[in-house]
Amino acid sequence: MSSPCCDGCFRIDKSAISIRFCMDCEESLCHECVTAHKTIKSLTSHQLVDLKDSSAGKVKDLAAKRYCKTHKDYTLEYFCTYHDTLCCHACIPVDHRACDKILPLNEASKDVKSSALFSDISDGLKLVSTSSSAIMHNREENIQRVNKQATSITRSISAFKETITNKLDEMENVQFEDYLILKTKQYQS
Image (cartoon, rainbow, N blue to C red; front, side, top):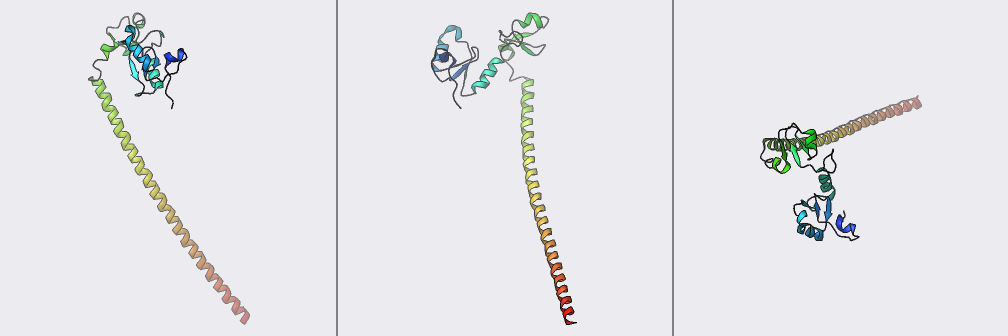
């Protein structure tokens, strides 16, 4: 798989391999552009994600989700606890006018990992993981059991076929012997 090119360098007809992705600018950045990004005061607060940790496509998808579906030019910066949804500053006066608690995202997400909901979800995921492991183990055992049964049935059929073939051969031999005896008696008479 090829590495993504730096978006900034690409615009000026240069070719450089990206090492980070800016979630705010929604651009892949090479080493030089990352350095420049960190030195420009207005860009220092931007969130840079290491591309080694995640594929560029996934990072770009995550960045795209940060924009409001209704007001496409605005980022989702707030969380409405009443509606349990993310919103931008343009949504607040329209859709959340009567809502009591609208929090900035950094404040709303501050204690997420220690919350009961996070704990419940984490426990649920562990249960799902354990259950899926048990199901996979059970499935493997079932496959092995079916394979053993198929082998046993095949052997039984082969043994039955051999018994029938032997019996038919024996009957054929008896019939042939009877024929020879009759033929011999007929010539003697």
